[in-house]
Length: 112
Image 1 (cartoon, rainbow, N blue to C red):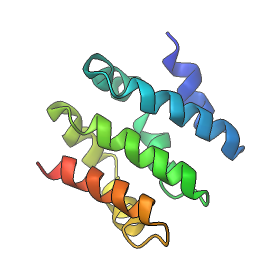
Image 2 (image 1 turned 135 degrees about the vertical axis):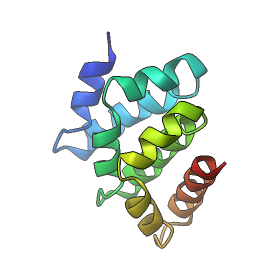
Image 3 (image 1 turned 135 degrees about the horizontal axis):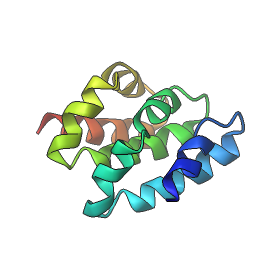
């Protein structure tokens, strides 16, 4: 499938490639049938790492992907177990209000 190369791009040292891959995953994560597949294919570890990216746009887009994935009940536990809460809570103090909003929405979806 197309997910393994996209997930590999998340590990790139280039923020531009990370952002492109996250953008595709963001679009895919909107559809219910993709939510489980993205998690099952191993996207969580690199996504969680990218929450700590120095690039605010990467932080923002990763938060959106995680927010979308957290709508699926079986993903919630896996997302929390991936260690996402600490970096998400740090983003609540981001100087970028849009990053704060998406991080908060992600935490909200995980808590419901």
